Length: 401
Image 1 (cartoon, rainbow, N blue to C red):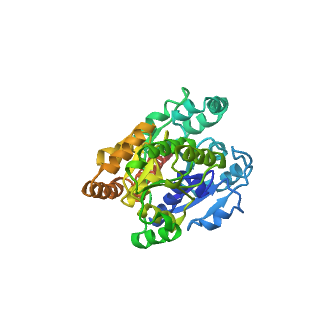
Image 2 (tube, rainbow, N blue to C red):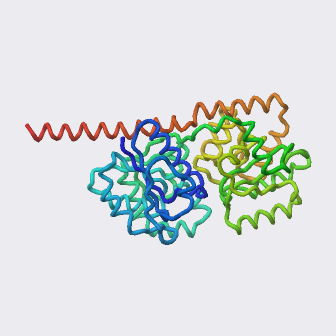
Image 3 (cartoon, rainbow, N blue to C red):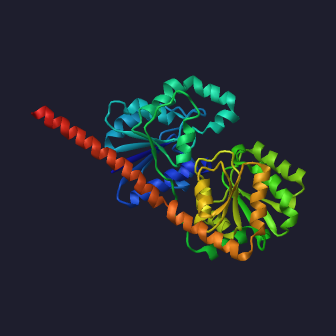
């Protein structure tokens, strides 16, 4: 098939959706499908060269404002959409989705939408003013984008159910397509050594790793407070935050660490890429994510792939799979819940911890590989393509008779 991934940005600092597009494009191309990506990025953006994909990338920016409006998107889609069997729109609330709805209408090229958790009602409860603003353009923009999509693709059943709760005006053809990521590099010993070479003060410590975009929804403040409450009982434990974040949010969290009196027990590693990122996973004792809202959690899946148990909240939409498999520990997104996960993990003996590490890797292989995601996505696209071909063929037979 010929497939276009359309997204707001391919910037790695944007978090899971950008990485998901990258992994999906790589996996589809590896199976022999022709894949291209298009984004609202500035063509001169440095990260486009630094994270080059082995598929064509068209940057249609620079975009204006947070909405990302750029006049090149709709004309480019009208000109080039005929080359594709399907267009996959990644994410909501930015111009690329509305442009796809405008440009593809009447062209006979179906588009599909991955909301990537952006319809979760947590946003409505947490940012009511922003939600009110979204209502101003929901009826004429995002509602129509979802309504007219060939299918809206949710990565978990939990996400699909939650999406119905944000706006009463909602209509979509819903499908669930499990998400996934590529397996990690296999040279764990070398990657672990490279990480400790970059952060020698962490050698010999029992690392509790948070890796991802540092944002209020991620519950980093809960993790800090919970760790402070158990730190005395685990003197060899060190909390590591790795990832980009807004300077105000980082300052707020550093103040939280100071007030908790655990400044020497917390490391701010910044954003880790490539080998350092994988080295951090392999060097750590457990992965912690106390999110108030998490559609899927690519970083959680990457941790599982490295045999790293996930200590997560029940607002991470794959929590049921993690809990039922015994690949980690799950609790509410509160200080008490996060503290409970940490205490339980620190109380495990070596045998129990080893069993959970082995199960973490097994859960990744069974549920969350990019190959499984790709095959499920192709099942949807190819079934729809066959149905369209059948309907067109039937119409031609009727016409000729």
